[in-house]
Length: 484
Ligand SMILES: Cc1ncc(COP(=O)(O)O)c(C=O)c1O
Image 1: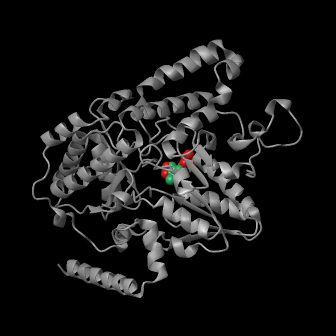
Image 2: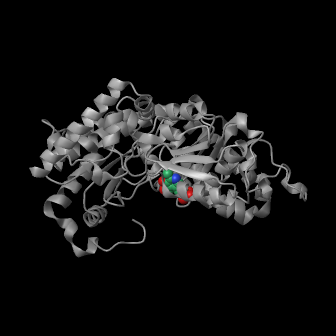
Image 3: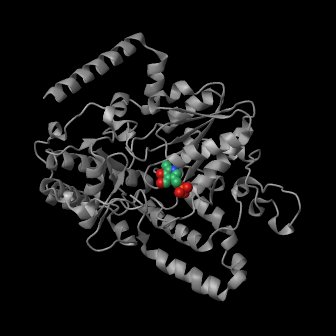
């Protein structure tokens, strides 16, 4: 009780502070509001930056009066316009897969496609397949398909390298386009590889470049006339909270900076509109919602208007204007092709193309808007079911409820790192695969291409059982594996 009233006092103070700021009509408040959209305050409370600093809010208070039944979920699945898409994936019997935001499942078509590339194209065609099977065109061909999923033109996207390597190339290119500026702005909670790459690049410049890191709420204040590029991940990998792309991009542009988005947790699940929001640069993963397989190549986007003057430092031969002229000096290829460095991993590219093609099947059933709608419905259901079924357990929702602030996952902080890890392991043992993110976060990805409402209902039932019975306390769930 003591704890709760202290928390309530904290809420009051926070509310008064917001009211005061509103009354003052401070520019700072409005700039923060722009970033998060209309329900900024909700988003702040559910910020992943330091979950333990947020006042405790038991799930119990959110108990629904008439929770949805499993039969009602089955009826939803029957009426789902995207239902048939599930059959395009090989999902293991008895598994509820809530980790497609980390590694997408195997699309049915991929097995045959990769076998063909291996047996016919490589085995029989040998080196002639670079031309005859179109291997040389794979990066741009797949890029053109990914473009349809992220609101870009076909010639603005290329499938190439890893997300980390693409971040390096795009950040370096961005710094070269703003030679008088020395600052990369990002947020402390950004995915670590983004920060590590920016740190490495800044020190490599040797010219006083800096990575300026702030918490999400303060991004607007951190962007100024010294900012060369703002680098942010649209959907936070831990909480699933989602930035307003148009608003943040506008803030960057107003300061004369370039905007680089990491779409790792957006591409294939959200209706991203790079061109519509005026984004300059973007990267994203091929192995998450694009279902390209473990270690699949990533993608890079450079807006058409920037391409002609865009120099990236990994000037390998396949980004050359004429690779087979074997010239001594580097001349960049025209357009997006200059983002290439070395030889593409053809078998992985083949799997990625199959993954993207599989997702594009959704176009006949409403496309990205339909995927996004379904993802949000699954998220709402997950949140509602946890509130109803797991009310007596210390799960604290850290994902924003507001649709415009939410990606395609639902996450809970559980307060105890060991318990969090063990609960996820116990769920995996039951065939419900989610994942754990330090310090204490249970993360459930909701890929709309193959998940059903009944899967969500069943997953939460398992979660309730694991918590009710204390099954997570079993020794076998306690030892940490290398990958969590
Ligand atoms: C937001 C984000 N960016 C980048 C990466 C890493 O990408 P890669 O392993 O392709 O370098 C991840 C991986 O999960 C991620 O979540």
